[in-house]
Image (cartoon, rainbow, N blue to C red; front, top):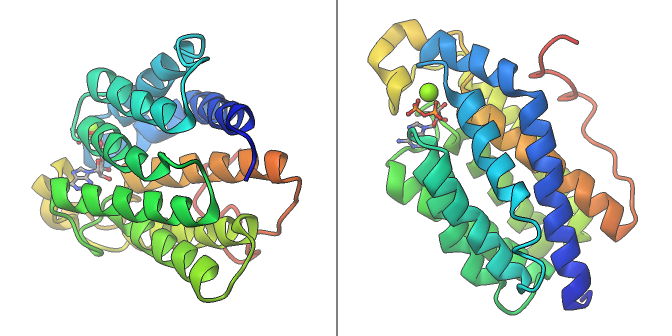
Length: 232
Ligand code: ADP
Ligand code: MG
């Protein structure tokens, strides 16, 4: 396991990368949310993660799990909407799994705790057309890749990101059962879920950061590539 300073640096870099990506994707996420929600998801996510990234200096002496916990509390107080408590509260809750440091094993525990909290708080299941549709396949794939297939964490994470991407695609043809989009009933069909999409973007940045630290370059599944991103 990398030493505590390296782990903290990795967490802070991940935070910077996520904040930068969500700033880039702000208008795309807003477009998705304007189709089936209230057009604030891009601004919510951008604001929350930028606030957390601005606290980089405050996090300089903290253990990695404390940094993660503080990112969660910052999101709770700055994101708002349904996604603030879901993202922030679940990150905060899951951070305790990283108390002993970040390893393959504790990262699986973190992912599972995060998913459990999102499901518990929001009451959504697979098929509700929410972030849960990206998270469930991602977390299950990650856990299986590490625990059963014995893959290195980087490869496991790449597979999890591919699984999340397919989960995002799956949200388009289904009807929303939770959140604001559910008010539209059948009119929500045919639109990609914003929260599942932001979940994918965050995971992609975690993978990019892990690649830099674990010194690897992994192939993503070609089939899924670019399927759910905006046209550039
Ligand atoms: P709001 O819907 O309050 O405007 P956001 O626009 O920031 O909040 O976030 C919307 C996203 O939150 C949705 O696209 C969906 O993925 C997610 N979401 C909403 N309600 C739930 C829920 N009950 N469980 C899980 N995710 C949810
Ligand atoms: Mg919204």
